[in-house]
Amino acid sequence: MNDIENIPELMASIGARAKAASQILATASGEDKHTALMAAADAVWARRNEIIAANLRDLDFGRSKGLSDAMMDRLMLDEPRIQSIVDGLRAVAGQDDPVGQVLEEWDQPSGLNIQRVRTPLGVIGVIYESRPNVTADAGALCLKSGNAVILRGGSESFHSSQAIQDCLVAGLNMAGLPLDAIQLVPTRDRAAVQQLLTMTNYVDVIVPRGGKGLVGLVQREARVPVFAHLEGIVHIYIDKAADVKKALEIVLNAKTRRTGICGAAECLLIHSDVAESLGKDILSALMTAGVEVRAEKGLPGPDNMVTATEADWGCEYLDMIIAAKRVDSIDDAIAHIRRHHSQHTDCIITEDQDAVQTFFTELDSAILMHNASTQFADGGEFGMGAEIGIATGKMHARGPVGAAQLTSFKYLVRGNGTVRS
Image: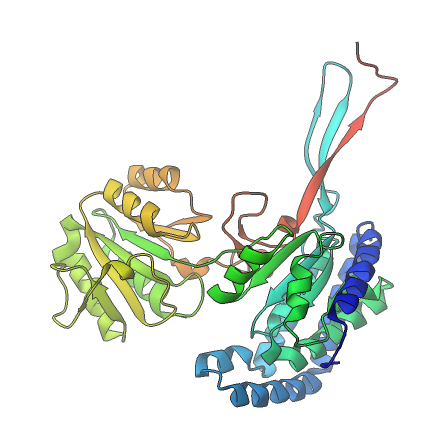
């Protein structure tokens, strides 16, 4: 179904069916959702050879498009990666059902009892690139939170995503849940994305997961509310009271473990009191590990550092490159971060608890860390089983978006013949 003529008609049909499915799914039992997810996990493993065969077709397509080695790696599925998909589905299945959870409860002098309880959002549109495992993550989290989902994967992962979605639908079928609860847009045509972004009658929120180009497009053109982050411009501040061993290990891990993820460190701020000692050692270690250091002029470090330009502050490299700057105080570090960060993740390395409190209080990133690698900025590492993305906005969901973040709430108000005077 790659040459569909009437995209608006197709998307309207998908939206209407998703809306109808969402109304059933909103009242589905936790047991049924657990059954569906466990059955989907079993189906993914049982059909792993089919999924890998579909993935080979996508890899061929990717090569013909001239995808980079990094993009091809993101696209590739093998048995260990399929095992990770299975593990993720089972982890989400094993979580508590968020729907119906009582968030708060209180009694009013009027005699009213009031509860605030979690409720599904409705229909979620997920637009993503490359990684076919997002099909499973997004489908699972939306199902767990009682939402129907419309998945629009990247053109390069077309066949892999379809094979995985088939397994999710098999799980729905096993549990007796509506099969339209997890739909995949069956075309590579980009007009389908434009339609999805404006389907306010059917879609309650859009979640883009991909590069700056995709997310920027969605944020500019969507009429539906969006949960997203545009960039992960991640800072690490090395305070004058930093522990030497912790600082070295954290910075190296934060930059080099995986450079292409949104939690990778992009800018290092070094307190002037330790610039000649710890700071210099860290920059040397980074360069030994193959990182290009773009440092402000005069910053102590290896001789072959590149001189930073203004463009390096606030840059998301997603590569073996890091910017570095000396600051004279924690206030200077916070001021620099406020000017240049993307409110994604920022970290302080220090043994001074007052400095930690200042950093945590005065910065308003979605994730703030102390003495921990920023590579932990991930829903799976937060105990969510998986994430549908990271949100840096300030409305509703923020940080890793797991099942609980894909809910809203409603108030249940109980009286006993109670009237207002």
